[in-house]
Image 1 (cartoon, rainbow, N blue to C red):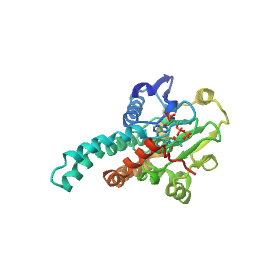
Image 2: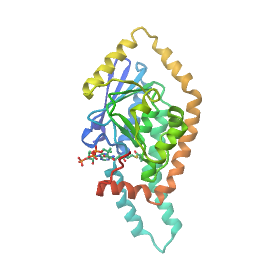
Image 3: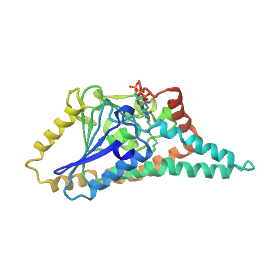
Image 4: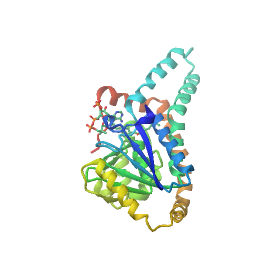
Length: 285
Ligand code: CO8
């Protein structure tokens, strides 16, 4: 159930969103990502909220898109093949495009847009590695904390027949540097803590227990904000992200449109299915 996989609590000016499916390393279906975006919208509308905090559970922050869920699209495509009459390639392409506009493009662009334009300060607490679209979301956050040296980011887009998504064509070069980004993206390599620290991650807590990590961060945040005039924080966020968000908004559309033909050709679906059925997972170097 999407709703219990991602829950939220309010604690003063903090809106805390938590991922609760450690058994799948907090993999996300489209519906989960949409639900996450819905929770951000709740935080957005709440005048008492100044900080939106993302927390997780277990040993991964999130393993990205759920390969089991995406594999189920095979049945939809088989239906299209059966219904396809007279070898009409244009009609087939139209049907496939419709499937992936719904199944990939609209979800991806919506979730990314909500993260780009969230006006509250976004804080990610990385208890472990983060992969794919979830990694892109973390790169869109304003402040990122890591539990220990085991944290890494992995954007395995080149292995899955995808392209940059979730704003990574802007956030990664901006935060990690252009050449480092090229190597990580081209060869689907893990971005380890030595590269994350100081560029994306601002503090390594060197802890080993996720619950303790989440608790310590909240205690620290509460102490940090004691003397602040919180509207200043939101006003500064607006200024700091103004030109960046203009660029991200443009790129959000470009990114998904570059990937759409790959989905229509069936490449990501086949690769996600391989991961699901043959357990050929995308383990980065
Ligand atoms: N989806 C579903 N289940 C998963 C996923 C996943 N992404 N990742 C892990 N799991 C499950 C495994 O099936 C396994 O379950 P079980 O115990 O029942 O077999 C459990 O989690 C533990 O996984 P592993 O045994 O594989 O754990 P390891 O520590 O050996 O490996 C890895 C961890 C490296 C994360 C490995 O599981 C892996 O490669 N997972 C796939 C990661 C991935 O490629 N994610 C997709 C990224 S691309 C992306 O997010 C863009 C999405 C674009 C579409 C968006 C539509 C809106």
